[in-house]
Image (cartoon, rainbow, N blue to C red; front, side):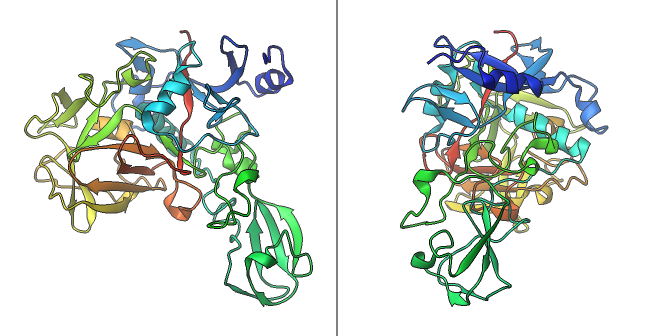
Length: 408
C-alpha cells in the first residue's frame, strides 16, 4: 500500500530527515550528512574530501544513510529503512544487497566508507552511542534476566524485553518464573531498553529473545542522542559493510565510495576489488591488483590483530582485538595509510572508539559486519568489525542498513 503524504513522512521531515519512495509508494527514511573533508573530521587526516563523498570520481554534496536498519513490509520483498518494525535478519551479503537495491532511486547498502565517516564524525563530536548489546538493554544501563541464577528480594534488578524488574521474592530463576509471567516474584518497574521482537520472546533456546524493533530504544540509542539521527547504529544485529573484504587476510576495498553505486559489482570475482600497497615514506598508498607483493594484510602478533605487508599463518582460528588496540608491524609498515583511518579500519592515535575487531585467519573470502549485536556488551561499538563469515552466512545476528545517493 502506498504511503505518500503519510504521518510517517510528516514526522520524518519534522526531524529534518529525507523520505524517499519506491515505485509502489512505500517510504524509506534517511539521514542526510553534508560533504566533509577528512581533515575537518580529524586534524591528522589529509585535506581532501572524505572518501564517503566520492562515487565514481564525482564528489557528492551529501550522503543519505538509512535512519533505521533494513526491514521488510512483505515477506522476502524489498527492504526499507523504517521504525517500529523488526530488522530483517538471517540473509547473506548478496541477498541483503539485492533487496535493498530493489527500492530503486539510488538506494544500495551502507558501505565501509559510510561507516568510517560515521566513526570519525562521532569521535569528533564525542558521541558514544548505546544500543541493544545485552538482550534488549545496553549493558551500562541494566543486567538482563537469565535462568538458573540466584536472585534476592528487594535488591536484584533485571531487564527483560526492555523492561526493568525488581525481585520481590528470593528464588532461583527459571523459565516458569520469568519476570513477565510471575508477578509474585517480580515487580515491573520502568522501560529502559528496546522493544523485543515478539516472535523471539520465550524461545526455548533463548527466552530473552535477540533483536529489538527499529528505533524502539531510548534516545541514547540514537547517534548523538539526537532523535533525528541514526538509530541502532550500535548493537542489535550486525550491519553488512559493503566495499571491504578479506581474501587470504589481504585487505581489499573499492576505491573511495564506489561501492555505494547501485550498479557497482561487489561479487566475489569482481575486478573492482583492489588491495592496498602502503607508501614507505608517508601515509599514502596505491590501490593495486589483489595478490600484489607488499599489500596490507591482517596478521597475529604480540597477542593482537596486527597490520602487516605479508600474509599470516593460516591456522583457521578466530581471533579478536579491541579496535583501539589494533597493532602494526612498524618495520614492514612504517606509515599506516590514511585510507584505513578514513574507512574506520584502523584507529587514529589516541582513539578510544569502542568495539572489537574479529578476523578469521584462514584462506578464502570473509566479509565484514559492523556495530555489534545483542550479546556483545562492551565489545559492540562503532569500531566493531566482524570478519569471521563467508558472504552467504545468515543468522539472527546478520542485518543491513540502506543508504542512498542524494540524486539518483
